[in-house]
Image (cartoon, rainbow, N blue to C red; front, side, top):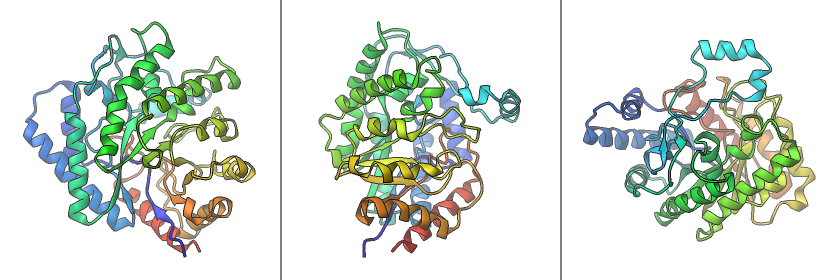
Length: 374
């Protein structure tokens, strides 16, 4: 019998000590670097232990040291300064009273999003090497054999850190791909799997490209995949995961581009593992896209559907998790399905809709549900 493995998208709730250090760095306040490093090491160890206790088999560092999954690059690469324009997703603009409520309740995280104002080059891999060392140390300490580390895709960087330097959008994407290439290769060389976070392939449709038709947006998305695949040219495909999402926020999501339209783009990415949303009410039905396009799923792709939601504090019943997984097992077989989450539980430091203890309860339900699949 094939066991359904368990994982998640990457980010997990951070402790208040971690958040305080991250925002001290974000604000440019003075802080003790050794104390910062010790705090991150201890927090990653605790995060890995909690994942193991919940039944997660392919673990991450929870993105502990990062301010967010995309804008962390401003701290590790040159060329970023000032602030990028904020643009609320189109679905929230359709419901202005809800958007106002989110803002008033602190439901929209605030953090620096500088513009690209100069050449993007690496400041060195020192911070990344610390993250890798912390995760590998924690895995060894707690007896976990398989882990992954997140990295921003060129496309998602271009979404949040917009271009005010390169002559064209494609030139900016190419520069980002060249700059990020070493980060991707460093992660895989360490023995970890690499996860590329690519909400630009869906979220950006209703956040940055509202003026385009869906077909015009698909051309943009194709250029993002081209840049990403270029950066991954020297990375083995079997070590790569890709995550697509429509925005990790509780909202109407009535402007989300359908998975049916993104399917071909997603399948062209150089990645063995494909992570996507299937739990939230706007995308729960889209498992049928994979059923109907079964013949178009490459034989080496492994599907990692989100079988627990990351925007509500409902804890899914394991039987429901098993039902969701069985749909995909019936499409590609148990050896090509891994149980995942819709998105991250700690996308932004200090911000998350799900209570930290409930986040791990959800991961426990994920593992219990995966064990029910036969």
